[in-house]
Image 1 (tube, rainbow, N blue to C red):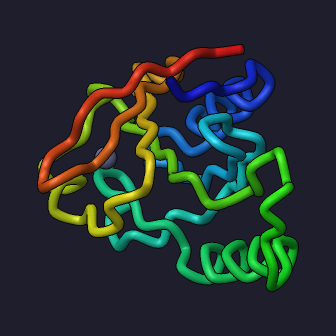
Image 2: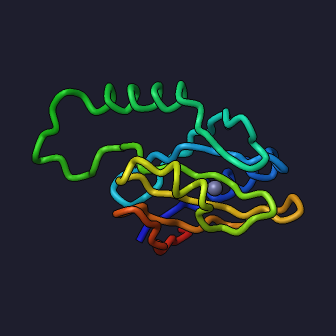
Length: 145
Ligand SMILES: [Zn+2]
């Protein structure tokens, strides 16, 4: 069960509506199964109306910041899981909240969570969540908290 705080869900909907009719995208940071932060990213796909590609510079910066925040050691007595890159989110303008054929073809990081929001006539809906495992997408339960 993935949990997404209501304020972050609202942030995603605002990003999706601002980018419409282009696809919007963002990186998701979390602890354990809880999304704690959204990092908006530029969609650098050549055709942003139909595809998304998270700006690689944003991803590199975020991964570095998370690594530095975590430090070299992970003490075993630590209770709370550290913040990590949990996955990414993108919108489907006038499309369904499910992975497209292009999404399946571009999914290469098996551990990342996928959130997808559909936007209909400029109005975004709450995202659906998917895991990418052994070549296919599996729907995941997503709880807005
Ligand atoms: Zn897509």
